[in-house]
Image (cartoon, rainbow over all chains, first blue to last red; front, side, top):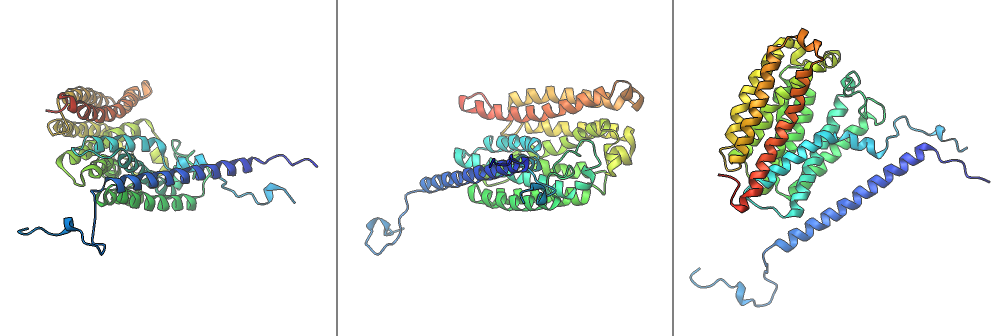
Length: 62
Length: 310
């Protein structure tokens, strides 16, 4: 039995779905890139984590 | 049964129809002016953050365009210039345009806040509100000053770009705002003069309809005269310089000549040559704005080589 010919509306829906998929994929890439930039641009950070860190101690007179 | 017509929806839009909802041509002006605002600022921005910022400013502008198309579907259907837009042509349902507009507005504002800063995001939110509510819902159908006050919506993008880079508002960003704000009325009134019956058929109180065409011609000249000091004044700030000032003097001289020629003509003369002068001034006004912002960009680009700026 032959397949019925594809209706124009199916092509349009397929195009719409592909468009949304590509947009979402690009959005994910953009958010990832922003995250990488934001995280790697920060100054070296450290905080109290239950071990002695002399460099975190406030020096006298400050 | 496999007959597709049994479940076909009336407004089955393609992806391109949703893109058209975002007014891509208006978006190109927004992208350009916002980019210039961001690049001429005295603070450098990481390229990824700059790209994301411009993208979300453009998305916000597109969202306000979708909200405008939702609200104005009735008058868009009457006007020749707008009747092929997705909502009046039946490709996209009005409710869909509203949903797209609201969703994209939220995404654009929040993402701009996260990517750049919350001042820029706040300005973007205000711009969307101004265009969709103040201009589209209130001013457009109630006052012939719709273009004058509504022009503020189109004037915000360079200010938002500047805020993305600096996190502040300054004289320079206010002057870039003022340049577009003062440019908008003569630009749109030149269009209204040769899009003769469109606005009156739609019942939009354009100046040409409420005060007549002679008064519109006078308004174009007066607003062009008011635009000139703003355009030249920007040349004396930190974003200006000799290149900008030379370009601005030439562009303003040409624009003023065009406005004066429009003012001198009457309807009979305009009808006789098919509104040739009005059309040429309208086309030139687009170049006028692009070249002013291009000159800002040139000053900023040449500054590292010791040539741009004062």
